[in-house]
Length: 180
Image 1 (tube, helix red, strand yellow):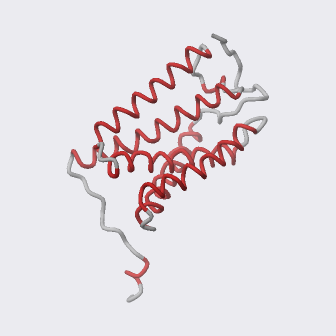
Image 2 (cartoon, rainbow, N blue to C red):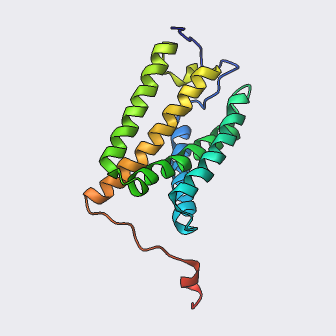
Image 3 (spheres, one colour):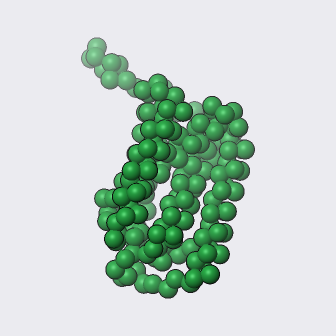
């Protein structure tokens, strides 16, 4: 186990500093990812399989660029975050709707995947501290954990909507305004 000990000022740091601004940006990025994932699969009527293929392709492109970057690059980092939320939406929706695993099973699988990723990351690196993400191995563990957690958030959140009988409002289309 290689223990990584760095400060947030480390020149090779690859992850945004965790501040109030980070959490606000994370909420926006998560919302963008959820909306984009649903738009691809549902609004464009491409389905979850095609949606997953598209979003994983985009995520892979952002992830390769992010991992190759020599340090934290804000645009690249946040584009990759949006990529994980978009692909995460498709992973959760495909598992629950297309594979018919349901929300509970999908959530349990994703939670297990997240715990496994964090556990192996800790065993290999001696920490899961995001400020210690300064090398490729730590960064890959970080992005794996982020993808699992974003997918889990979608599956668990959607499951809660159905458990508590909450429904989303009807969709508003631009054509609804054409007669105004």
